[in-house]
Length: 164
Image (cartoon, rainbow, N blue to C red; front, side):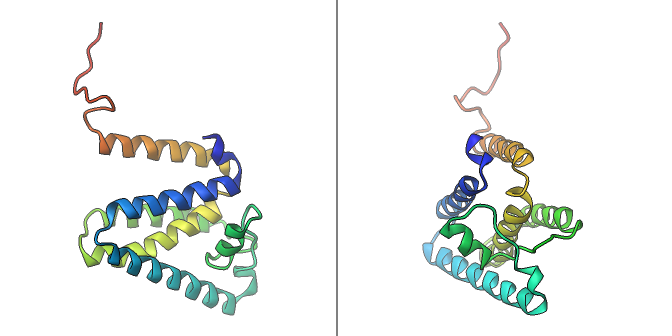
């Protein structure tokens, strides 16, 4: 959890986890290539459209100061001053999209993954990285949920708990 204190470090962790999860779950990898190209294209197109509407919509500065932060600032919409409604709407939309993804399969899942990945990056850059304290606990909860889903019989493989 200490890695998540600094926005730049947490950005590397977030994007690395996204790539690792995609590599582990999407087969064949040609689908993964299509997914990544489509997500990148969606991001750059959304950034250009938002920039054409208003410079303030894309002139926000991504937390941190590395090449990754510069690239992300040119891909994800980072407004100068996010509106108060952006946080709950984007966060709830991301959760809804993730839940819908569990119901889909095949190319439908790949098609919905494109906006979901972009929305995840948007939420990370505008909501999560901006507030590292609650983010750390949300990430810890997500790790626990993922562990319970992956290993329902427990980390050590015990199905029951004995009280001594």
